[in-house]
Length: 314
Image (cartoon, rainbow, N blue to C red; front, side, top):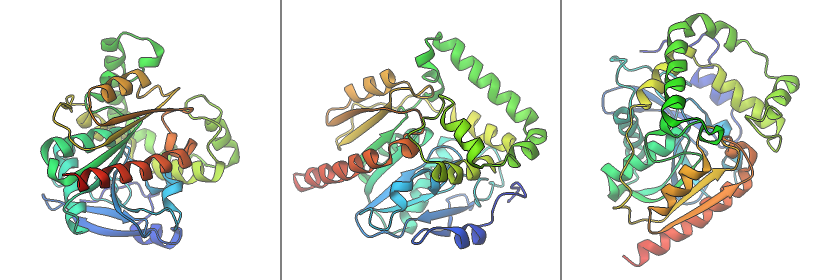
């Protein structure tokens, strides 16, 4: 069932405007929902990207370079970016996201690979290794924690956790109710140098990001229906914290020093509970893929090398 904003580009439009190598294609999830999957078309070891909720390939400029050295596969979330909404609109929580991740891997013929997650995608990556450890060779987690994400948001503001979580859930409920009226407004915000500069210097995002890359990433994100995005977020918020004691593959967790959506203290404590883990702090916000793309790319290549060495010693 496809009920996207009229301003959301179709898959063919996305393909026509995509940089060289980036390819969009259809994948059917376990419940029959059609997903708009994508790959960067590069040569190298395969990596499954569990993206931030509602985000697109354009949030990862370093991985869209043809010589990035990794073959990324990913998908756009249900009801966003050319993916259909499920027939049962309640099938948008972590169980469905996990099915989507497996469907994309199966379609690509991957029995296992390194998995990368950003923001809410970190939850998906850790849920995948929790339920299907044989399919994950390593995890790179950027700006996210392994479950119970809403309980860690706004931590840098030093608000009591129950208050911060209640405020965020309340905001999401309001967005779901009012989103249909708000969508025509958010869809039509012009993302030009003035608006992207305002965002890049807002403190929510850092000025180390580049105008052109921010424009593409934010334009795609803001094309989503506000009420549907809130619907996805509320279901994703029900995901509980994942046990980390059984993880036996290399893991790298990367935190942004000024990330208000995934506090670096929570990311660091998660790393401390995993044996073969590496914790990295970068100068940036929640939008590290746009602010520090080269550093994250380097950490991904390092993790792939560590995962290969682990497999050799098994």
